[in-house]
Length: 142
Image 1 (tube, one colour):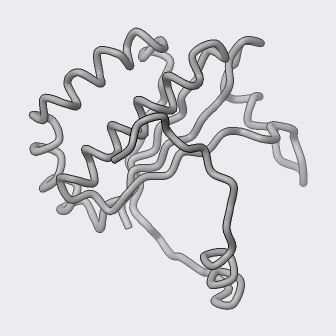
Image 2 (image 1 turned 60 degrees about the vertical axis):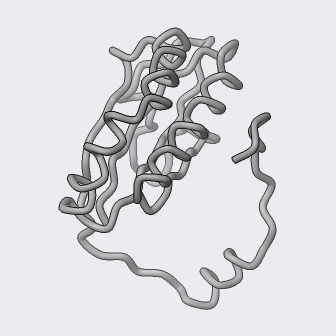
C-alpha cells in the first residue's frame, strides 16, 4: 500500500465545508483509479504510554480541529499513474478553489508512505468490516 498522508488544521467554523470538499475531491481520485481515502478527526491528543501527545509536535489553535487524511494507492507506480489524471480534472480544480478559501494550506503537513507491513487480527477485522459505524454523510450524493 502507498499512502499520501495529510494533517489538516481546520477552523471549527469551516469543518462542514472542509469535510464536503475533501469527500468530493476523493470521489474524483476514485473515479481516476485511486483505491480510496480515509478522513479521521482527532479524538484524543493526550500524551500516553510514555509518548508525547500529538499536539506536542503539531501546533493547533483553540479554534482548530486536527484531521488526518489518507489517500490509498496500490504502490508508488499506481500513485504516479493516477495523479496526472486527477491533476487535470476540472472538478478538482474547482474544489481546490473552495479548499484554499476554507483553510490555510501552508499549515497542511503532507507526506508519502510505503507499507512496511500490515498485521491484522482476521476475526476482529472481519467483525469491524461487518459492523455498521456512524459516518458523516455529505450533503451531496455521488
